[in-house]
Image (cartoon, rainbow, N blue to C red; front, side, top):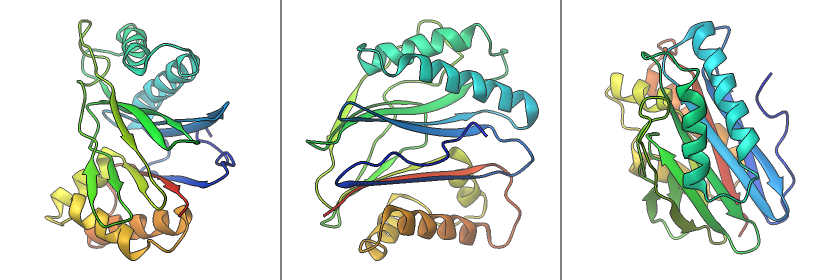
Length: 227
């Protein structure tokens, strides 16, 4: 119930997200909102499962929502989210977070990756770019700092965000769900909408399990700039 009910309407853009839980409550979350020509986008993952992890996920979501519209640069926003989590997260818990602001007019995306499995930009010309971590996990270190990354989504380019559970399932099954495979899925589905690409990525994640039950939540978010 904490996840978005629908994606905001963005002229020239398509956005879709989904989270498939492995139990009654989830520890993944994604969120997005439009704000005066900007798209605010987040995907977070709290370590662990069950109600305790879900409650910490709710705290992470609330902290991000309280801060992401402010004028502070994203590294400062993430630092303040970290300060909030340090007051609520027990020593054996932590979270990862990808937080981005996209300018829907220019396609510029400013982002911070706090220890999250690398999001992928699949270019319309077949190239791809992994948005590697720009700092450590949240809720663990009081003196941590983060850097801001920048990229630009051109017409036909796609940003794919995955939760750690998707990547861990593929590794456990010795399945190839790395950047090249994800970019290939994007190329095959390149003529479709963000929702079509989302469904293709979910199918690839399920295929990597080989019929096994999900051991962790699977969350996918797709942002596509229309050609």
